[in-house]
Structures are given as structure tokens and as C-alpha cells.
Length: 126
Image (cartoon, rainbow, N blue to C red; front, side, top):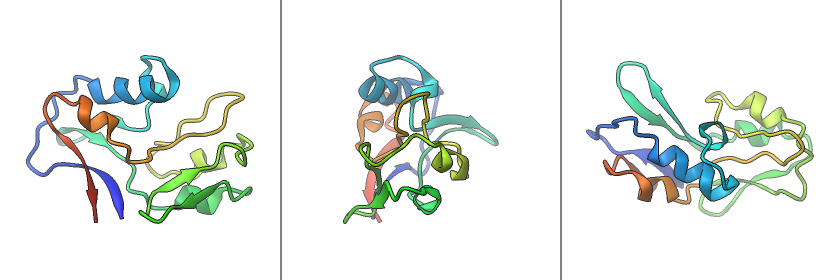
């Protein structure tokens, strides 16, 4: 299964380069609210990434979210009605839902990982 993960032992400096790269790539805007990952601070600062759990797919009434051969859950923009049920179901709050647009989520593309100056993120095959 293909996933975006935080490298063990890495240190995030919360520069938001990963977040901005994601929002820029998919929405052409420097807006953290449009990124499919977040920087969180609990015990340490670290990126919160989609674990590809499938809860969004289970919640989608249109069947617009399916798992591809690499294990990544993808949103079919043509089938998505923008109801937001997937965003409500995401336990991590990582589905981006904007008014009048289909939802979007992490597809483990690696754009954020390439943008990180601290080399904190990586796309792996589990």
C-alpha cells in the first residue's frame, strides 16, 4: 500500500513548506486550509498525513471514493456531489471540502515531501 508518512526520527520545524506546496499544487493558492495534510503539535510538531484508512470511502453515498491498486483512496471528481460526508467521516480532518467543489484528499503524490527542507516526509509502499 502506498502512503505518505513521517520519517522516524525526523524533526519538523513547522515551516509549512509541505502544506503550501500541497495547496499550491491542487488549488493554486497558498492556503493551509486547502492542503491535504496539516502540521500538528501534540508532544512534538509533526505533519499529520492521511493513513489511507478508507473511512471517507465508506461514508461516500455516491461511491465516488475508491481504492486504487496501490492502496490509495482516490476521489472521482465526476462522481463527487460535494455533499461533504467524507470530510465529516475523516477521523483526522484531512479531507478538503470547499463550497461548490468536489472534495479532495491526499493521494500520496509526494509533492509535499519534495518541498520539505527537513526531509521529514516520504512516500512508502507498506
